[in-house]
Image 1 (cartoon, one colour):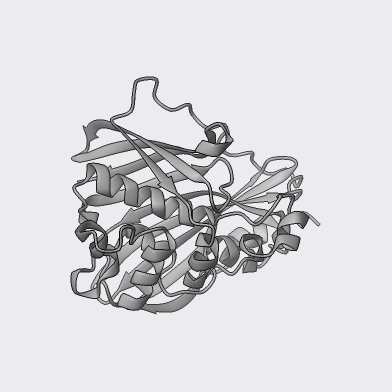
Image 2 (spheres, rainbow, N blue to C red):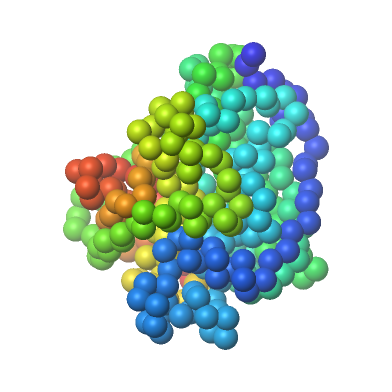
Length: 291
């Protein structure tokens, strides 16, 4: 049956209480590839509790539990096979720097449902607040194969924009560990697509794939380290579209272009590709906005 878009969009927000501390932050950082070399002072900012800074993309894992992509599937009117689901894109807006320890309330609801004919795209927005006010807002785009056809609006184009033609300001090559998906899933995303070869085969992949949010976090770390002086507090917003899969053991090429300031914020455009597969695109339409 097609998704019942009207019912899903009318559903009340799902509210849950979340909490985290330094152990959750460190585990997340290790899961996206931090800590290499282990004694590098720049890496110790991510792995040593006495120096710990929180990479903003930790917001996608704070509190543990399933990520927004899975949470959106529990919305009334949405009843789909998990093997048909892909993470289409992710947006994060920071209202304040993330604390090392925190308790907050996260309210999530579907804010858009697009009918692509042979697929559906759902947009799940989560607003997170603590006792001092708003902390962050994120939006997860959920791509569901075979679930379109109810006659709804098609929504924005899914065609990614090409990267800038000029040479990048910085290029980083980031190796992905063979066991990185197994480590990253300990931050809350236990989708078997990232660990079980049989499930991955049913979803159409040769072998388990890396979490898109792992690539998302590792890419932000590369930008912060290379162009923002390692200062996680400068990040204001971060958007990407997942253009392809990453297999554990591959190398990511992260190309970065600085853009002119806008509304008091600078921007870095980013393109990420898999080196061993002829620079196959992995992340597209990626922008980090910073103070």
